[in-house]
Image 1: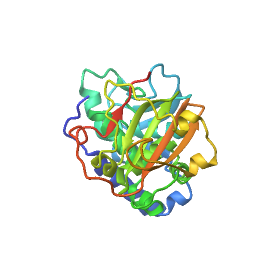
Image 2 (image 1 turned 90 degrees about the vertical axis):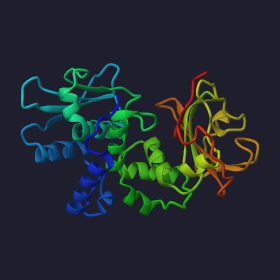
Image 3 (image 1 turned 90 degrees about the horizontal axis):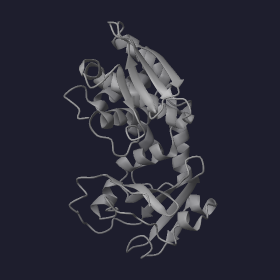
Image 4 (image 1 turned 45 degrees about the horizontal axis):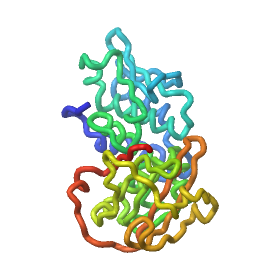
Length: 301
């Protein structure tokens, strides 16, 4: 759904982040991630005491991963629900996403007839990949609140090429999934890098850093099936320590230049995460799809 003019996600998340840094210290992530459940309830009481978030709870939500709901009586009383089968790392982002809807969109959700009692978000809405409108805004809010760039940059500099283990440490620092941490890193890195999520030798979706995108290192995959190279770690299923730290692949395997390939298998989600690092600035190239699309989607085989 298209967003209408209202609070800006990065402005609102930045305001809360500054407050948390002031109260808890800028080293707060050395101790624990954001307690998003307590934050959502306490902050909403402070900014909107007559109509706050009263509850954050796990429920069985068929077809949804999260929801922001309101009471039928006025002043509205709000609640956040998340699919209780989610792992804790995904749960944090889901709750932050719904909190973002409360901060940014509660008036729209309450007043628009298209919403009946709240907003219910499926996996495609809470994914940090291809959301649009208010779902994209809620994702931006959640990522900035859970993984502030000023802290992320201190631990992984924009020039650094981290391996999957280090990015996994960042995911643990923020209490989010490895995928969410990699996507956040890709937003600010100066290096050329590309994330590919796949299963059974075929890619589901991919995301390039800005520098990789501008040098033509992306997949043009709309309405196409994309098969991984036969030499890819995910295809060969060699998920040892070397795959975590990186394997150098020669020119012609992925692209017409060498890459350092890293890969990790998630049995729980039945997919592989492949991270490609390109070793230099690369050729300057701007394809017509690059400025339009930062998240290339893949069609399963």
